[in-house]
Length: 107
Image 1 (cartoon, helix red, strand yellow):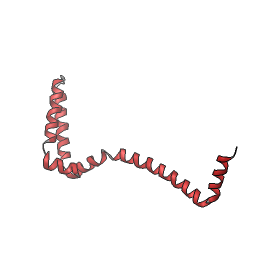
Image 2 (tube, rainbow, N blue to C red):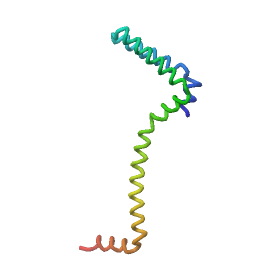
Image 3 (tube, rainbow, N blue to C red):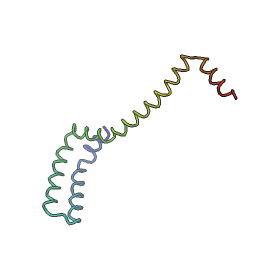
Image 4 (spheres, rainbow, N blue to C red):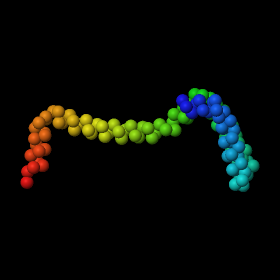
């Protein structure tokens, strides 16, 4: 949501500036005019796509989503393991604690 506000209200010329940078970089690297024209056409279609608020939101969502998903799955696995330990302790109660104490104090 923040990116939407920033892009549409404070940086509406971002894609134009980025396009200019990409074209200048391609020209400086010695790319052929055909390659530069292809890059320019690609940047125009990117601008048209990025100016649509729904597509802009979808692109913005997909950037951090994979990392968030990985962190969520790892956290869920860790918390599930802890929950299984708590369930075992509540199911066996003092017997589990007593077994633990006996096993650690036995020679």
